[in-house]
Image (tube, rainbow, N blue to C red; front, side, top):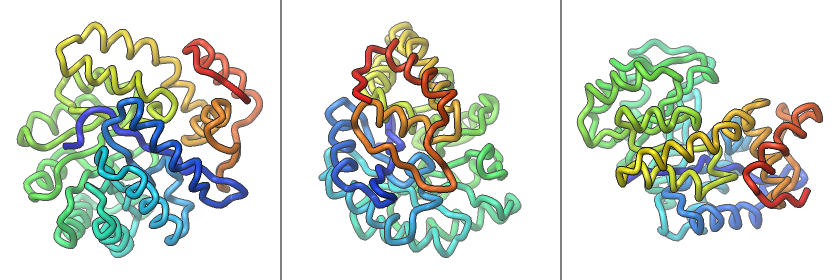
Length: 293
């Protein structure tokens, strides 16, 4: 259900308020270019600095604009189990197809604490849950053994794996049932992860090049591994450029250059510094993307 290329969609802002018009346009841009699923309010969507009201509103807007054309996997995680259940219940009530739930950050829970966190959330809702493991941002790595244990809970259906460890991903794939989905959480590792059994990606780069990301996954799953690999290398410099500064600073600048969002991001993040803008622009031009700013 959640395979292929899924976009971790940005939250457009205008004068520090959620820009609903541009958000709706971005959803249509993604679906028109073959994206398999939309993920609002992830890290790329600046979930950490959205208010409760904004967080719920962004999820509602995306669900409304998608209109069941593709799955919506709502980002509903936080470092509080109570808060996560609140957001996840809201997403379920509004019609989200699933929830992406980040490991609790800052608290640094034990593996048993992580297990109980996800178990309690799963028992509170009926929609499918995807664990999001990104220790580089959370200082909390959910170990393969814990994910394998959680995979036996019926509505915990997958993991977005961004530990940067192919070994960790391989351990999860090897020791979970075939209906448990591992998705890449790092664009530059998507092709290698597909090669060892991942079923897709939740992508930052898809904000900018949705068709290429969708085509890479489609080609791979149709058996055209060379074609998929060619797209991987075509986009490799972009994958790196989108992390010249903290995500989502570069991807929002790229979308601004393409005329798709305002040049606005919420503190404590700031717009991209001058020394990196030319590097990003050069990469975008090499991909023949139309730039208007």
